[in-house]
Length: 141
Image (cartoon, rainbow, N blue to C red; front, side, top):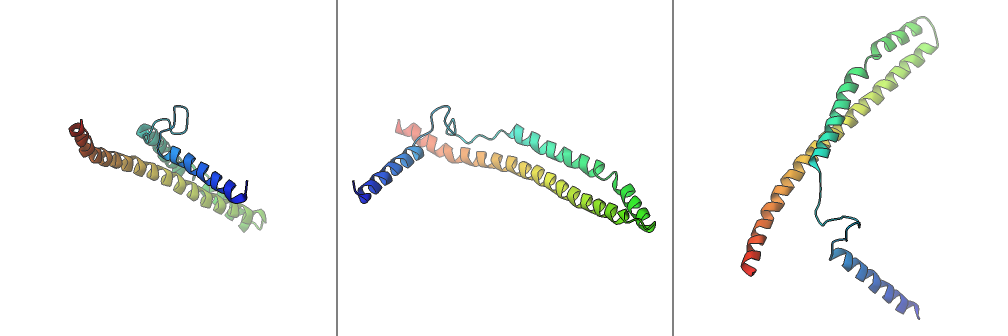
């Protein structure tokens, strides 16, 4: 068998596999399960709520040690202790990372709220688009 023949057979086999995947719904246990997009809004809401709760707690409890740590760093620096600058640096790093974490929690919460709302809008639009098709199907019987 020449290279061109083998290459042609491989392309045809790949095209058949691709066409079968595009033209059918996988059997149970395969990827996808049913042909419908499934988003469980309750799960999205619960995760978004957890992210919001974590952000709320972090904003309060993550900042508890900041004032005393800062005061300790200033006092050590004023007392000519070399570790004072290190304590202030740790305080600054903590603030930076805490802000990043708070922003991430807010982003997750907001994104899931948006996803939940957008999915509901898409569902209404899809159902509206399918109504005329189902009406046509009745006439075709």
